[in-house]
Image (cartoon, rainbow, N blue to C red; front, side, top):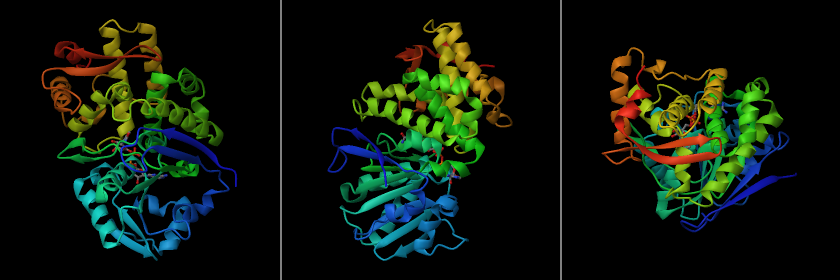
Length: 385
Ligand code: NAD
């Protein structure tokens, strides 16, 4: 068995969080997923996943090990010796504090200790929630993550941000708590719905614009192979994203400076998700729209030139992302006339902004990023149709 492993090192937040080993598995290793996630002779573990992921072909060895039947319901719990499998509902609407408490209650009922391991297997929602629960369980249990969406592989599972939503605000509660180990099984991507795959590509685009011009040219010039999920290319994309993100989180794990750049497009995206209703559109689609707005704002405040804005808009268009100020997800909910003010107001409530000003991640060009406060009238201009 040849293992392709990459390690990220951090200042330790608590015991066991000083580094993340990222293991990229080959397709030959994938059928052994159950013995990788529940190694023989280890103390009890809690595996957390969702009702969609547990039914995926790659997960069948795990489902079989726990005797999961085809009609699994959200909230179901299964035992295999000292190990527990908890299956939650899928998607953003389940990223709740109640589900965090469900994970913790299940871990306690299973007799887990601080030295026990929590394993999150799923998209960004399951990874963020399992990591949050692990970080507060007895002040910090060991954590492993198995990202199963492209978004989770290139972004959510990497770099230690955990959390859940609260009262319609995204990621309002959470911690910084890196996983000890990330298991990358790229076969998971074969079953990912096209909209979710494209959603992950949006975070890839973000990373490309921030740090990886070569990745941007892959997105520009190899659209067919990227969308066909050509295995070697996808693996290369994931690796490039992980390495780029690692170089930032190693320097600034808790987002006191440099890491804020990773929020490119996110101030706009979170506002759109709040206005549209959480879960109304894939997170990455909101991020892609936000990137377009951030580049338009960069142009309007004189930071970037028209050519760069146009290059980015061309990629948004190529992959079917909205590049207009008014996002169609708002249709029937908020009129184009009202959208600008409501989005701006949601931005001001976002945790990353003080009440009197809105701070944005803007760009001069690829690989050249600035953090800048922008006045409300200028922001409104890029939100009004
Ligand atoms: P998700 O976790 O909701 O997954 C999307 C859907 O795909 C779900 O219904 C899930 O059941 C299903 N699914 C998962 N894997 C699958 C597979 N292999 N095949 C078929 N279906 C599959 O969404 P996501 O886009 O992965 O993650 C979004 C979340 O990630 C958001 O909550 C966002 O806040 C968070 N996020 C966190 C960070 C971070 O740094 N922690 C960064 C970016 C995003």
